[in-house]
Amino acid sequence: MQMTLFRPGDSELLIRKSRFIGHVRTVADRAAAQHAVAVLRQRHPGAAHVCWALLAGGHSAAVDDGEPGGTAGRPMLDLLRHQQLDGVLATVVRYYGGIKLGTGGLVRAYTDCIAQALLAAEKKPLERLCVLRCSVPYASEGTVRRGIDAAGAQLLGVQHAAEVILTVRIAVGVQTAFIAQMRDATQGRLAWSEDFGY
Image (cartoon, rainbow, N blue to C red; front, top):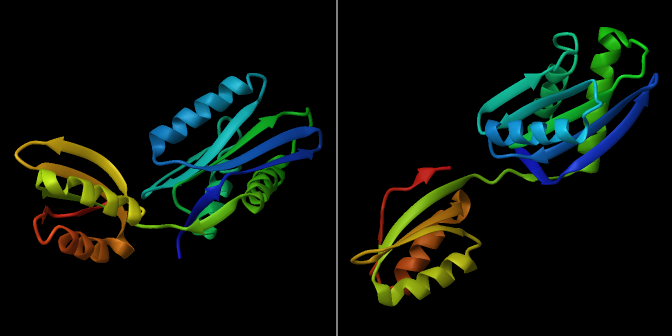
């Protein structure tokens, strides 16, 4: 079962005078990951390396940021894959302590740093979402909005035209029951357009 993070996690290791600061957090996509890494670079201008790995929505990345190839980003990415995580960014900021660790030492350091951060994080099952769109008479808009809240869904958008068009993000597991409840609550006066995975 795929998992994601409910709460982020941090770690800090000191290995042969080098300081490794690890962090794992949720991100939606590569652009959000790159932004988070840019913020880290600003916060740690004296760091020798800001290495990162990403698994989000079918996209992956493993960035060594000047460390020898395959010693930082790839081990972190392998750890995210091994734990079946998605929507997660792993970052390690390294302050070089003047003693070389060798390729094996670097792999262990980056892996251990992210492993510790993942132990501190709280995980949850990854919930697959879909987006639904419905049109409903103005008189039933309040009923549908209350149903969206009750289902734990998220209202993404509302358009007011001849009827009200609502766009909703909801968990795939409750989608069918939600549609049936809304049809009953509005006495069949709403029309659903085709949903698409999210």
